[in-house]
Image (cartoon, rainbow, N blue to C red; front, side, top):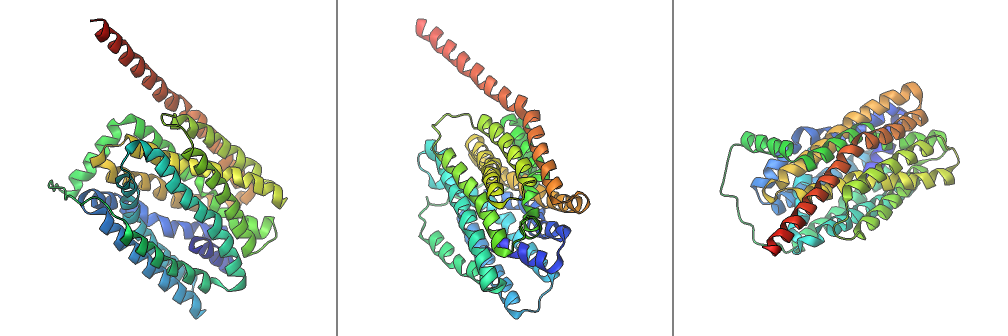
Length: 392
């Protein structure tokens, strides 16, 4: 709700697609700057306590934003400053929160399904939040929208306090932070199965995922609507994401997620290309659902692959690289797409993003399929070895 509200307030004040890009930049670029430090902190210290601190800090940020909106005398730069503060908080929140899901699950075979269900709750929030935000913005104003977000953190913090985790065992090895950072880079470089996925996520986050930066333009200019229209667009995208996460949660153990990622990225590109030039709202929302389905794949599947295949002692740093690839590239991409849309228009900009998504999928298809072939060869080798041992 807060994210939707901030974007709408900034666009209403400025009527500038570039300022929309700058808003996303302000909220997410700090995650790019500090996420590696967040990963090191996650691997060194108690992730549960880090998460409690970040959630309390997020609540304070939300209260300040609500107070600012209720005064009625605020500027874009004040909103951007508070968005920057939230970006810094998230740099430490994400590397601690994602591995915590891994620690909660006792049977590690359930991890892919657990991550998908965890993502489904995020996407259900994306389904309900923007629609509710649009209605609240239209009827009650931005201050109420931001206040509801601030109040919601009370439930979040109470939920965290109720979670029972295994007793925390401090890591006795205390190397310098730079040594931890270098170790993480070396691990990522040598673990090809994770590195390829991370590179693909980086390109998608830079060139494709920032499409949602332009959604206020579609709501107000293309569909001739208001804040509620903007909320509905985001909710239909959220509906597609929920459908995608439920699909992932239903997959059988051993399913090749990299092939699913490849197919869904192509569907994502097709959805964006078709959504971009349809002015009929109901029809456009059908393709918005497809866009949401594809958006979910880039985050949930990549997150699952990284956590399942990553070494436990590297998980915090790996998730910081995940945040770096995503939250680092998204703000730069948002600035880029905001600037480009001022030259060629929002519909053409999103059309280009859809085409780029398909090109990236095709470019990486060889590498993702090669990992699958390599795995098949290893399975065949193991079967041959078992047969020989049995004969001996």
